[in-house]
Image (tube, rainbow, N blue to C red):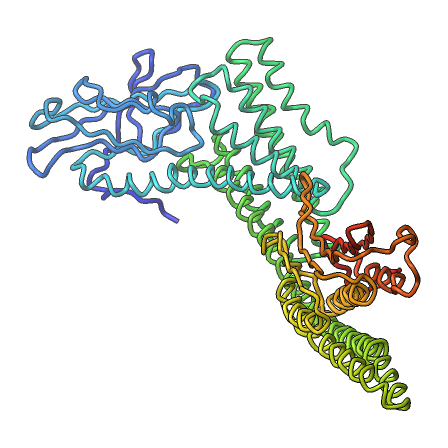
Length: 590
């Protein structure tokens, strides 16, 4: 495709070529100087006619090797040897130099162009355009985009791709293809970013890094194709080491010849090895990835051959170099391949995720069914346990009272009073069972309210006063795990203690005290104490008679995880129930 050029009416041709010895020769551009010449500089001279008006004028050089200096009437107006692209022939840099108005004169003006290049690179000047800058700059801008901006974009892309591959390789260190490609990209980025191409001293290191980069690509090709790395792999890096070593022996000329002999040819050999590998893989297995990679390598191989022939002046026409742009084709190919692999991996992950979602949904459904069955089983067990508890409580309490009532009713009429007392006891026991079933949300004081009222009425019948004392904070009397079956055990125990006091103590007052036992760093322990002011156990203080039902009381305390203490002295009997910090979910063993 033709490259952007200004209108041909602004081109200067032919021009005069003046050698360093003073010899002049008329030449037609483009002009290729002899690659065997020892001259570092060639001067091209031309004359152009300037007519004021139409804006500023400029000189446009679309292509030259390697650096060019532009002078108008002996005044320097532009020099590529002082910019960032100095000495970088492979970038195909254009040059435009605006002519100051003070340097121009009406009519004939002399234009001198000095082209510089160190042997063995030949000097080259493609064309010279002089005219209004507005007519020349569009072509310059388009060439700048092609040969300056685009390579910079590719260089940035190379760095980003290297960083992305480095992160992938860090997470998958056994994927050696990512590792080799990462190293190749980072070496190339370092070669382009950190080495000063204007300095001849770094030329050996430029060649060394270029060889290392291409050698790493060979290793990447082996790993990418799934082949074992060859035993002679280390030899791929040997020319790169020889370039700086040989440059230490000779001078600048030897360094340049060493670079030209070991640099580009070695890169060409490495590219040929990769091409052979890809061709072999395409013949044996084929595949989209091999086709894309092979197409990119074909472009690179042709570009390297073209640039080598151009460098040696074996091809006619302008000297443009395409290896840098062709190398970008390799990056594009690698990006496409890795993106395809990534998309394929994502598709597999999505498939696995979809399967996992289905399996999780099935597992959740099974768990729900299992939980439902378990909940139903627990509910049935809880109902069964509650039925058994109610049956046991009714049997032990109300059932015994009813049996007593039946026995008393079968006696003579003198048993009417005991019968009434037994009936009242049965009624109290029934109310106790009903009250204990009420859910009071763990509030012990609220749970004992009804029991306190019934106990007070019962004691008034026998002429005994009830002294109810609460010596604990309301917050300490709340137990989150307090259940109805706990309360019925506590109430029956307290009923037994009160009944014993009524029957055997001869007391005038019975005190029921809810108190707190403070301990450092622990939750306050709640005590329920039933104390009477009667005569106590007398001689049996240490071993109370069995008719008091103390064994049954201790059993009820143990079922709730509580501790029962009974003390007797000359001032009466004290029954103390120490409640646990947390009540058991199931009855504790006696």
